[in-house]
Length: 155
Image 1 (cartoon, rainbow, N blue to C red):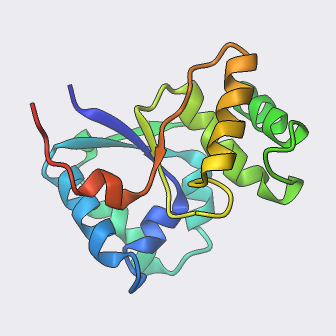
Image 2: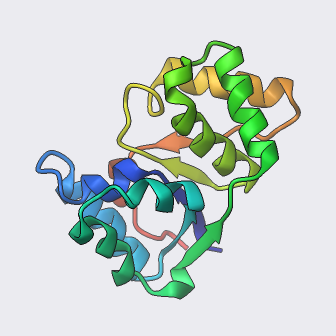
């Protein structure tokens, strides 16, 4: 079974960033080759509306059969607020919390991000998973595209 990978906006932008482009390119190559399925939320799509056209068009290169689309729910909004109320991050990180909540609720195998400050950060990951545990949700794996791109399909 293919891994279902939730991506946030930093992954799309990372494709065009000198520091992250090589690893992000390898990640998207695995998706295009059918090794992974990416989960795209309406939150990501809304955030991309502010991005340049060439950034938004990146996702058009991926065959639709390797994309799962999901909408933010009231439950995700409430879970994101619990992360903030639990002081995992501050109120200015609400969108980041919503990405994590959506990925948690749709039972993504992994959330992938280049956001080291609010998402791919060991203390924050422990905080998010502590809130998830306290509220009866599954733990969420959070990694960078580099960690996902370097491992081929071992099936």
